[in-house]
Image 1: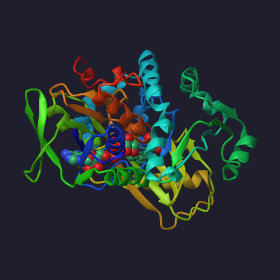
Image 2 (image 1 turned 90 degrees about the vertical axis):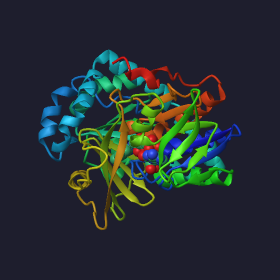
Image 3 (image 1 turned 135 degrees about the vertical axis):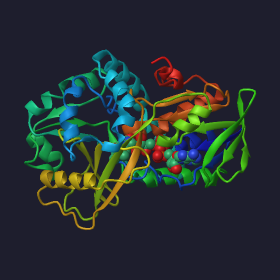
Image 4 (image 1 turned 135 degrees about the horizontal axis):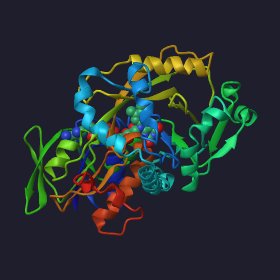
Length: 414
Ligand SMILES: Cc1cc2nc3c(=O)[nH]c(=O)nc-3n(C[C@H](O)[C@H](O)[C@H](O)COP(=O)(O)OP(=O)(O)OC[C@H]3O[C@@H](n4cnc5c(N)ncnc54)[C@H](O)[C@@H]3O)c2cc1C
């Protein structure tokens, strides 16, 4: 079949690579080169442990304080408050314990095979050197501080995540440059990371091209639907591309196209920032999550990256790099000798649904269109697994992950 894959972020690219394994012809459509949007500058954590939703029980109590702090972990830019309110209210509804536990179990199913799903693609593309399986450290100022996150830790453990409590000595042994900064940690040995998320996507995309795919650097604006199937994909330049099937993987920009395929999906951008320091003067061997400040630190090929924060301001507002500067200041508190010279900063649009789960499944109005978007904070972790499962759906095979929690029509009844 000739399959149009809309979007060459991690999700579209991995989906295409998995579809090629079934012999399909791939036409990528994306005005950007592969791995240039949200999949470019993320923190690169590949974590089977990252199954908790963004909204946890009791978090709503902290939200007003965060909203008042312009450098806090979550902000809503003034102009966007009214527009984001319905989404935020839906988001609050998913913070109940029963709901959090349902979501975590569903996400654990999607995240557990992270490496099994990347490895066949990276082995073929020659990109295995872009992933590292050295675990992740979650660090806290004290054991008492960690107890505030105990519910989440217990929930992860109940779902089979290996998280080992460690004290300051073991912490310093694993990461000498963290010595003296944190008094308590949890080591998740099954986690890993990529040294360069954009290079990882580009490696898989380049192999897909070598395997016969083409890439049209255009924007999709519409579909030509005939008898419940997409016959043509319409591009902004007026061209029509004839296809047998469609994968919609346009990240934070997917909602409009999903609606044309019959699914109304409350997709919102949670804008996140990074700073990357080429000569940090700090050595780490693995990702470190500073839980209290919600910053992910990853030693990458191009330098030490500190990433995080959530900002609601929509897809069009310019970046506010003050948020990236705040990450750097927090980094200097964690590593007092941190060298910030020549650092770069970046903002990306995390594609987020109010229940912190992606949409993976068939479109309501087209039997030959499938969707894979909305992976929020864990798109790098879940990109390859989503690709494998979309290929299973297209082939009519049984899926290996229970996809029912990710149904595209799940919001219709809310
Ligand atoms: C600061 C930050 C840190 C993060 N850290 C991590 C992490 O450590 N681990 C993790 O797993 N995740 C992380 N994430 C989340 C992760 O980056 C995203 O979930 C993931 O990159 C989303 O991938 P995607 O393929 O869905 O979207 P994208 O990478 O955004 O790709 C979407 C593509 O669709 C294209 N497109 C849009 N509209 C159209 C159209 N009409 N026609 C054609 N093409 C179109 C765009 O040009 C773009 O190339 C982080 C995100 C941020 C912002």
